[in-house]
Length: 308
Image 1: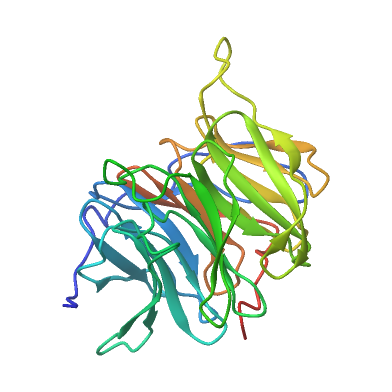
Image 2: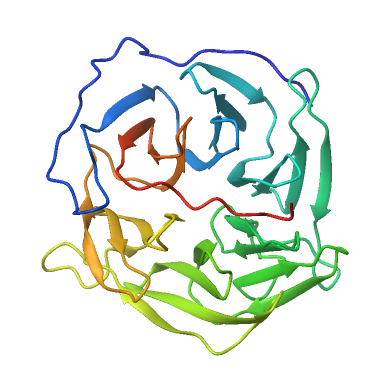
C-alpha cells in the first residue's frame, strides 16, 4: 500500500467560523472552526493517545492524519474506501473498508503495515463495513449496511457483527434498517447502534463480549419540522460523562446516558461523524461532507481501553 505526504486545501481559512450558545456543562466553549476543506466526503474520525486524529476521505480512498499541532498528511493513500476508524490500545488503526473487510494498520510513520482482522461471515464477504468500536478485550463490534455494497449484496442481512479476539465472527443484530454508527458506553455494559433512516436510536445490554440482550429505543432524534423521516443518525461519539453525540441532519444531537436530549451543536455543513481528540482530548473533531471542523468543548471525550 503506497503512502504519500500531502496537505489540505484552504489552510489559511479564518479561524472563527460559527458561534452558538453552549450546552451547560458540555460546550462549545468557543466558535466552530473549519480546519480544512476540499475533500470529497469525509468520515470516520478517530483520535489516539498522543493527540493525533485520523479521518477518511471515502471516495478518494485516503486516510489522513492530523497531528497534535494541526498539520496534515496522507497516512494511507489506498484505503479500499475506508470509512469508520478507531485506534486500539495496542497502537493499531482499525478501519472499516467498505470494499468488504475489517483491517488494522500499524502506526509506523515510515511504512504502515496492514493486516486483515475479518473479511467473511458464513463464507461470504461483508456488504460494506461502515463503523466500529473495540472493546476492552480487543473484540470488534462493527456495522455492515448497504451503502457502497455490491448488488446483489453478499450478505442477505444488514447486520451488526462481533469479531472476537480469536477471529471468530458472530452476527449479533440483523433486524435494523442500515445500522450505521456504533459505540459502547464507558462501562461497556451498553452497545449503542445508530440506524440511518428512522429517528429512533437503539441500545442493547451487553451480557458478555459479543453477546447482547434485547434492544430498546434509547432516544429519538429531533427532525426538521414537517419531516417524519429525515435520514436518522449517522455517526456518534461518547464523552467522559457517558453523553452521546449523534450526527444528524440538524447537527450533532447530544443525549445524556438516560436518553434525555441536552441540545444540538450546529455546524455550517451536515456532519457525518465526530470524535474527541487533540492534546487535551477536549476538542470535538467533526467530519462534514467536504470539510473537517473542530469544536472546543468543556467536557473531555471517553477514552476506550480498546484491547489494551
